Image 1 (cartoon, one colour):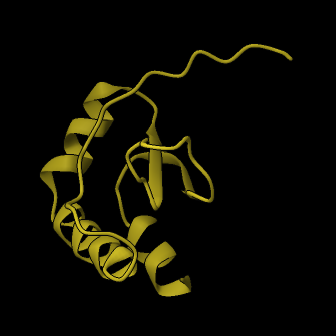
Image 2 (cartoon, helix red, strand yellow; image 1 turned 30 degrees about the vertical axis):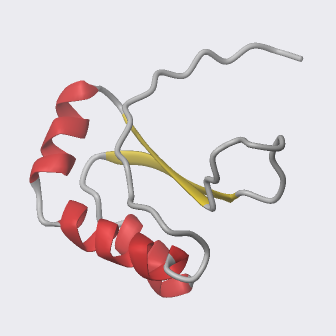
Length: 86
């Protein structure tokens, strides 16, 4: 996993790299064995990172990690944080 983190940290302009693994889900829910969240300071920084060669290497690395975990493909989603205190 250390090698994978090195790949994910190559994204230019990132402020945070977070990786979480699915452990449980509701019956019938789709499986998400790995969620990779890379935060950027703004959409321009994100666009620059996605346009670079790190994206392809990241997808290849992610697919290798989850290859034995599920039959499916990687998806890219853009999200916005909405943090609140508990």
